[in-house]
Amino acid sequence: MISQKQFQATLKKLAGFKGVRGVIITDMEGLPLSSDIDTDKTESVAALVSALVGKANQAVEQLEEGALNFFTIDTTKGEILVAPENDYILIVLKDKEK
Image (cartoon, rainbow, N blue to C red; front, side, top):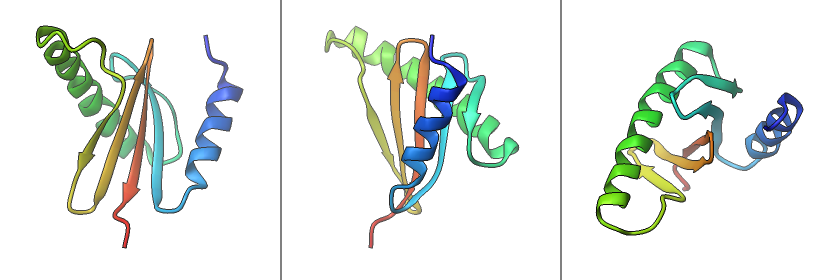
């Protein structure tokens, strides 16, 4: 199990990268564990992305492509970087590079 101190260290490190708007760590059910953005946005992103992770895991399994490691959602505002790991999901909201 990862400690709250480790969560906070991870958030701080990732938030320091250029263009990062927010970092969220959530459990696989979409319950936010740690975040550096406002509560409403955190809860919304965590719930939606955890649902996507579930569907992506199903697709990878049905296509017999091994295990899901990482995916990126490219948007007009930037990117949503998603890294599911065991019992947790790391989500990074990032601005478009100019």
